[in-house]
Image (cartoon, rainbow, N blue to C red; front, side, top):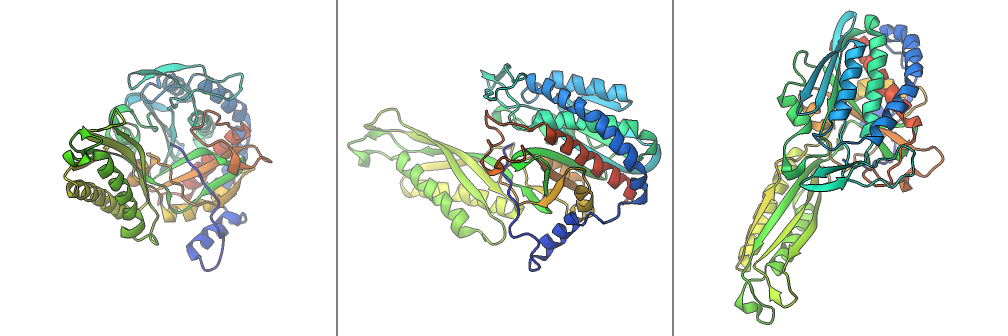
Length: 450
């Protein structure tokens, strides 16, 4: 999914107590880590340094060979072979192409899950790289260009790096590491259910069930070294909808002889905007209701029988999400009836819930984020992008962080966004992401069973 994150403003004001507490935690690098973690740090640093060139090589290879959702066969095979060689228990074919690897440490302790998404996008690459994608594939019945335009190639490579680091530290690890390589985060054609939900339905979190789950996502509007996080909602619920408006065709010179679905559809678009601006408590959480397509008619002087619209709804509160969906249906139906027509709102079943970072876990792990070598942990504002990591975080406490990938010295606010054909990843950010996931894992395991 596409993300735009900004620094939370203002930061660390005493009047914003929850945010201030997190800011203080992130900035207090003197907060002592668990003794068991400190004992592992020298080996952790050594292994991370050794694996970082491999992470770059893996990412370049995966970037050059991108695969769309549920088509990630080459990527999954690469991951599975790597995990097996490291001694992980490996399960393949979860949710079509997903891979789950389990590594039991030498000592008893918690179970930490780490997730990486594997799929690319139907985008033609416009970045001049020696390993630029020239791949093509079939998507929704059409042949398309394919590119890793959202950083998932980096996510896979980073988690492969973490796998190698954890395997090298297996005897010292007080607990179990579960790695989840997930397909189809960018959704599938025809609203097919896949990705995280299907992985969970097929037992990705079973035997053993994780105590927590972590994920890191590369984003272009933070600079390399910046690690963004926040407690509570960090990405929005994402729902696609379609609106069908039925009228009655007539000549454009005699609109009274029919029912104009274009006028009714236009009124529905405006009516939808009053839901977000006038019918929900905007001081609780924001919402976005956008109509992105409006299709009707074939000729300038014919009023058509029907109009079709589609769009997206973004919310952070589940009750607000349900209320807006209800009001969308009522608004469309009643406006259409007022003009003698009919309308129906269809919400696609493949929508994503909001990603909610567990507040207690976020506070607990903020000092770990601050200890990432070369990193700068900071609280960011929530973004309106969607993420199906949300479903993993509904099963166990989750923490989702964002990793800046725009080179230092460049204005990240002007960088090409995720999903752009010109999306560019500074390879130095891959080391930060790998270190972040490894730091979270080692520190949490060292804290013992919750």
